[in-house]
Length: 317
Image (cartoon, rainbow, N blue to C red):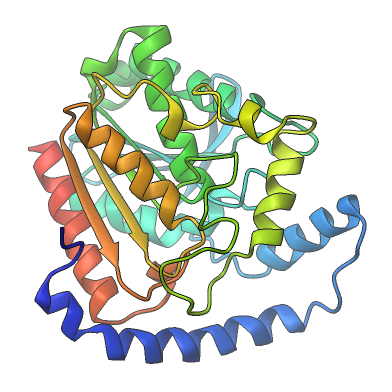
């Protein structure tokens, strides 16, 4: 079984060089924030402030809310072909929709989709299931009112990291709670957290040992904030960890992950079970690429962008 093509294989030296240089820049940015605190509350506040300094919001975003949940809205100039419900990353603890303003604006313009990026509640103040509950509230509103408000109620779910988890968790609940999976065109799941019980790669047993944006210690902290008091087995309940859920009868998915990502095994386990359940799946594995690989422009990330845009075009056709 080959996970990438000869064309991608030839791009690996360039990718490794780009990641090494980019990680030096990332390290310099975060070094300027000083030493992180050792207590949990202080560490959460420190990480939120550090990541907020990297956001690049765009004026085209409209701040609004759906079902009482704050969102950032992007509308296309042409009639909408669908609604992309986007969830940002950040381990369910940090992050905000502004992280993806540029990419969400590009999607709205390129594919003529409405993009609704959800500002779901974060742990530790709001542990499980607050975040997925917010996602479900937004999706339920869009399924009920999207046709009237935007001219379409065709939905694609998606997100990165914790956002990939959110998209998968909401996808399962649309099937189980709303009986509306037929109204979902697909799920764009980018290096999502699919095993909150800590997969081997989350624990440091990765396929590639290159630099990464995540660490085992960071993932453990996120899990303790989001799922306090739960054992690893309890965290692998299918309602919490999508990789352990019943995956039959779901919408088509694009799963993307790098081999240096501490969430590699999450994506591979989810993708293999998803495909075995006879759902339509496309898998993009980026050799040597870390968590957040789209931030490192090179041949491999360009190939991923083409794959993702082709997937969106096919789902919206």
